[in-house]
Length: 368
Image (cartoon, rainbow, N blue to C red; front, side):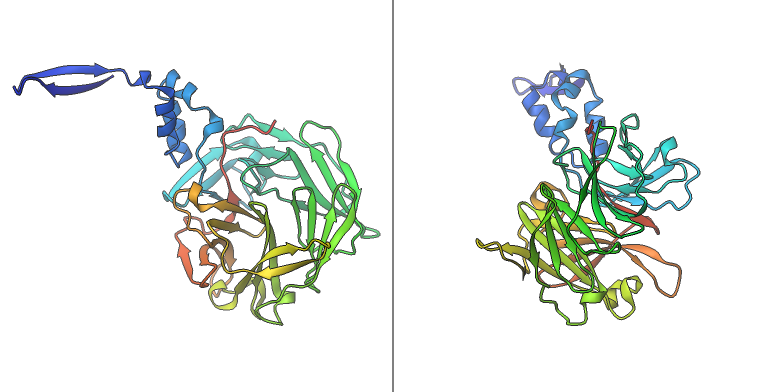
């Protein structure tokens, strides 16, 4: 109950009036909840009373600014910490599944710990265990790092240790086996792969060519020629990301200086952003762009995703939020850099972790 004082008839007489805030209309409560841009405030809001909780289901969680996961090389405590950039807060979660494992941000509130386990750290009891699989060689996870997963499935690119034949290995949540799809590609195990809307993108590191595979058939849909770079020497020293930007396919190429990706970012690296253009006849090319509208790109060493700045408090449009690792004269440390795509201007954002693993989009929903 909250107490109000009011005056009547111009006198100083005050009357105590009690109001039951739990009786507010659901549509008013929902408006309040949509302005809670920090997940901790949303949880506290729902905990006030039964009426407030029933009016704000977890599916109505406002869009959350991504958190940063702290890196754990040897985690014996089972604790994992997350940093919220807008508020400068650190959230700590405990789960036995974290012991001796490095958590990596995936999508829609889940992180990957180890090879066969996905966990929502905010709902510790909601853990997804994948069936074991003998990869028999090298394998790379394709991290589904969208804000909302379109389907409850994980994908891995596996390379046979004998013949080096690449395969797309997939597993739907709830199934007890993995499915395999042999790829018609001459890719090598150190090349990046990106899975978007049942299409597999493979950027070949030595040629700059992008091979696009239709996952439904396992055949090449088309081959995209190398993109025009800011420097002719950048192809072999680039880190590439391909992301879905509201239906547009964007490619971000971070070009590294002569000391490679582990040098000081501020002095050695530059970037190009491209949009995939597919003609009616089926040919495709990368077109350089300097404006991605009201969107912002979040990149780390694993993959990237796109968020709409209008939906998130504190996100600037037409920017890249890069979580990178700097190797200088002293011990290596992590850095968050916001890059304006149009001008290339860079701004270092305050990070509370010396060692950061990846971006993570928190959520209260379950993928099961």
